Image 1: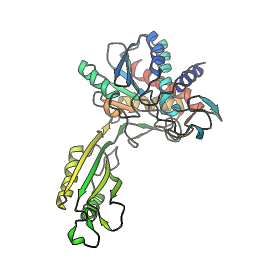
Image 2: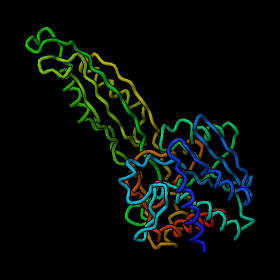
Image 3: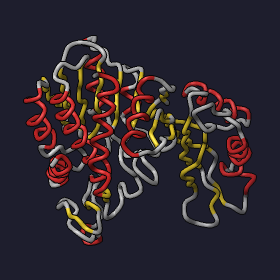
Image 4: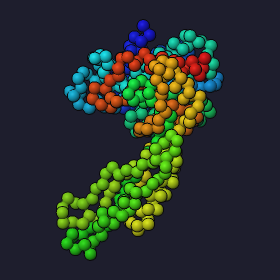
Length: 377
């Protein structure tokens, strides 16, 4: 009966086509279940984005469940084996956009709270939910807005579990205790356009930039640390020329990205890039975009509580990892000292025929409930 309740809520959420920034009533479904449990629910609208802050209790410690109701577009619907927003069972799996990323996690969190509160009505501390419909998009009007509001109010958080799909081969084999930062640059190296037969009358920005690019590729930005691989610098796009093979281009455009660890800072990386470009005497323009700082939760009470819950429920020893892309954990970590991401296997996320194995749904809910018991009972 419990598994059916979690599954039913998952299916209800999947049936709502909440493509970023739309929520399509997902948060209303959650509010409908949270308010009877004693949660005070607050809807925070920012632009087209719907956010939810819900809290039960006024004392510490505060454990927050965080996540997003928005999903990425389905892609060509006719490529799906079944309707993307019609939850479908097939071969022991539940199919639909958002099954893995991350509506099953949201349903499991809510039902875990129902069970925990019913069994421990006098539990210590507070439980909260921080939900957005802007995680898969620009992430400008979502979690960061709620975090800024909470900071202005002086509300302190102690623990946060983000329901991102972190598991690899099986449920519980990997949790994320941090994420790398993301720093992007758009570099324009300026030369002088001219006829390719008269190179002495032009300045080829490709030739001028090549030594500097070689240095950037060869640079060791840091060695990483216990939790992080070394910082990575990668070019994602390079473009120059008019399309004619007899014209020296006037400009070279390069897109690049750092995925950086806590062993480096965004400002430090910027300074080192400029130093390399300046060393080669380039005439250039460089525009920077910082998508997120790295964050790290060292081994501690929250990771111990989740790892213990996973072990008790599944027998699996969870690995702590900082691999993968960015998440809203980067915003929450600015106001919460311990942030851990944990959810179902991620092999099918953002793909055609996204799915979750049915056998993982109830254990996922049980792990969230066991974590509550480990920290707030």
